Structures are given as C-alpha cells and as structure tokens.
Image (cartoon, rainbow, N blue to C red; front, side, top):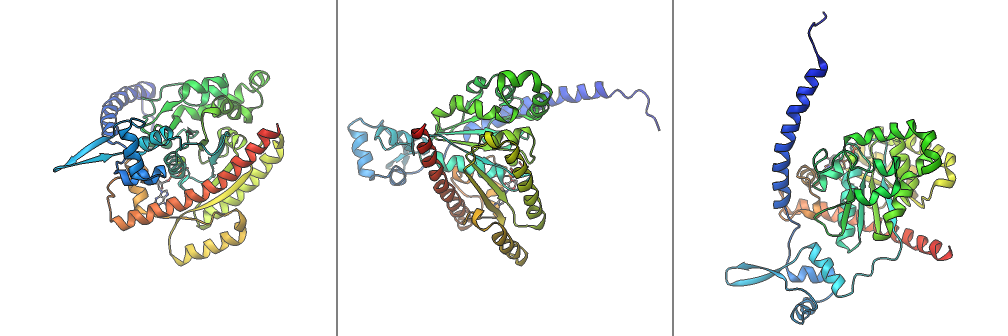
Amino acid sequence: MLITGFDLSQLADKAAQRGRQLLSDLQSYLERDYEQRALPEFGIEKAAEYVGCTSQHIRDKEKDGTLPQPRTNRVGALERRIYNYNDVNQIRRALKRDEGPNDSCARVIFSNLKGGVGKTSHALHLSHFTAREGMRILAIDLDPQATLTTAFGLVPGLDVRVDEDIGPAMTTDPSLISRLIKKTRWNEIDVVPAQLSLQYTDWQMLQERERSESSLGPLPQRLNTALAVVEEQYDLIVIDTPPALGMLSLNAIAAADMILMPITPNFYDIASSVQYFSILSQLASAYTELLRVRQLSLLMTRTDSSAETRGNIALLNKAYGEFLLTNRMPQTRELQRASGDQMSLYEIEVPRGARETYQRAIDAMNGVNTEILQNLRQVWRTLEISHSGA
Ligand SMILES: Nc1ncnc2c1ncn2[C@@H]1O[C@H](COP(=O)(O)OP(=O)(O)OP(=O)(O)O)[C@@H](O)[C@H]1O
Ligand SMILES: [Mg+2]
C-alpha cells in the first residue's frame, strides 16, 4: 500500500533537529563526567618506581626546587604526597630521565577486516602504556565509528566538527594535520579524532583522483605524507583502522612500520584472516615502492579456556607461528567494563569487580604491551640505521 503525504525529507529534518538538542544535552553531561574523571593518583613510592629512582631522591629534589611542590592529600593528621602519570613524566623531564627511545618516530597500525576483535581497545591501551613510559604519542583515529576518539573523551559532532578529522589532510593539504591535532588528559598523548563523515573520505579521494594526484601524490600515500609533517614531535604514532580494507586502511598500511592484527581464535576470524592476508599480499605487490612495513604481528585476543578455543589456538600457532605474539589477551569483563566507561585499564583507580580479576586483566595487558614495545624497539633501531645512512 502506498502511503500518501509521507515526506521523508521533512521527517529526517525534524529528527536531525531533535538529535542536535539531544547531543547538546549529552555533551554537558559527558563533559562534566570527563572532567570529574582524572588520571589515577598514587603515592611517592609508586611515582619513584615509574621514574626509576628512590622516593628520597624525589623528596630531595622537591626540597631544593628542582621539582615543583607536589600536590598533597590529607588523611586524618597525615599529609600524603600524590602524583599521577602526567606528574611522573614531568619529574622524568626535570630529572633528565626522559631520553626518548631515540630520534625516530615509529608508526603502528591495528588492522583487521573483522570488527570487534580488539583493534580499538589495543590501540588505546598501547597509547596509554607507552605514554606511561614517558613516550610522546600521536593517536590517529581512522575509523568513522570514532570509538577511539570517544575513548579519549571527544564527542564526534560536538568536540569534533566538520573537517576536523584526518580527511582534509588526505584530500586537500597534508600540512592541515597540524591543525587537526587535539590534546587529551594525558599530557604525552595527542589525538587526531574521527567522526562519521570520515567515511566519505574514501569516496572523495576516488572522485578527485585525477585532479589531486598531480599535486598531492598517489592516493595510498596521503596519510604517510601528512604524518611526515608532524612526526618529529612524537616517538610513536598509533593508528586505529576501520574493519575494512578501503582507502583509509590502505593509507594506514602504506604509512605503517608495524602492522598489528588482533585476531580472536574462532573459525570465522581465522577464515577472514586468510582473506586479509591475500588482499594484503595483492596490495603489497601493487604498491611495493610505497610501503615501509617492517613488522607484521598477530595478537590473539579475547581468548578463553574452552576446548574449542584451545584447538583453534593450536591451529593458529601451526599456521602463523612466527607471526604470533607470545602474549595473548584473554576475554575479561574488566576490559568490557572499562571501555563501557570510556576508559582504559590503566585509567581505573578502583576496579568495579574483584581486585584479582582486575590484576589478571592488567597483567595480561602489560604482557601484550611489553612484547609490542620490544618489537617496536627493533623498528626504532632500523629506522635510526636507515636515517643515519641517508
Ligand atoms: N579481551 C577482551 N575482553 C573483553 N572484552 C573485550 C576484549 N577486547 C575487546 N573487548 C570488547 O569488545 C568490544 C569490541 O572491541 P574493540 O572496539 O576494541 O574492537 P574493534 O576491533 O576495534 O571493533 P571495530 O572493528 O568495530 O572497530 C568492546 O566493547 C571491547 O570492550
Ligand atoms: Mg574499532
């Protein structure tokens, strides 16, 4: 039956108007919520452990004015010094214990055709882990779903306005990237956010291919060119990609030194990894001269102890042995809860569930990130050798 008098355009307009009101109400709520959530705080012993010195050394340097006066917290009659990760990095710098890993910037991308495998979760946790080590990080959200962006406290459509995603740096002028970078509550982490309209960037790039290639270079190279503008300011660029191999992901691959592919050990994900690698291989042979990838690693995620998972892990080991990271990330409610609150495990002060569950989750995450960091150190070394030979 044909419905007469149905005006989709009017209806959609009305929905958009209501949506805008809803968004602005949401923004005030989210901003209040985000401001209230600070980085976790700890005492001087923990701060000294992170810095790699004694707590007495920090006390002495606070006394002689090398370090600023610490914030304190009064518990009864006791006045306790408190610090967070930003303070720790400030102390490192003041005590000259902040030599970055080297002079080069490494780029790592999280990539998989499949959704829900942990790309964004691990991009976020690697950013926080390496920032905690004192490195300067640029996180780039290449996924129009903008999950990483919201995890950094930015609301697409409100904090991220039209043309404030990476799109313009890829379609108009690479140097625009400097203007797209936003601060986060971690002093060492900046972010280039995403928003829904980023999904048109693929389309736009293809539409304007002929006109733009003479001035901006080959399509898959655009992100690489933009990153070169700002990478001097960072030790590591962490890129989160959408679950697809379109132009955005292809740009990420062409910009990457290391590809990390989170994979869950179930039949469908294993099958899709085969497709992923054949597409990757075709791309690599089509664009050999554009690629700079030096490492390709698979990270098993969301593992459990079922017989089926154990069987699939054995299959994955057999097939991809040398590509697989030794550390795995098990399925854990703590991670689910943390991402529900737009936080990482590193930002949680008081675990929601049992402390042991949280400890297991963070130990596993630290294991994964320590191994990734070891691999990254090799990347930094090779980058340095190639720079010094250049
Ligand atoms: N090890 C884990 N244990 C429990 N939950 C997890 C784990 N890893 C990821 N998750 C949860 O699974 C969901 C999907 O994870 P995430 O967003 O990181 O995947 P993704 O690969 O980025 O997905 P998409 O391709 O849609 O962007 C999130 O809610 C996240 O909290
Ligand atoms: Mg994601």
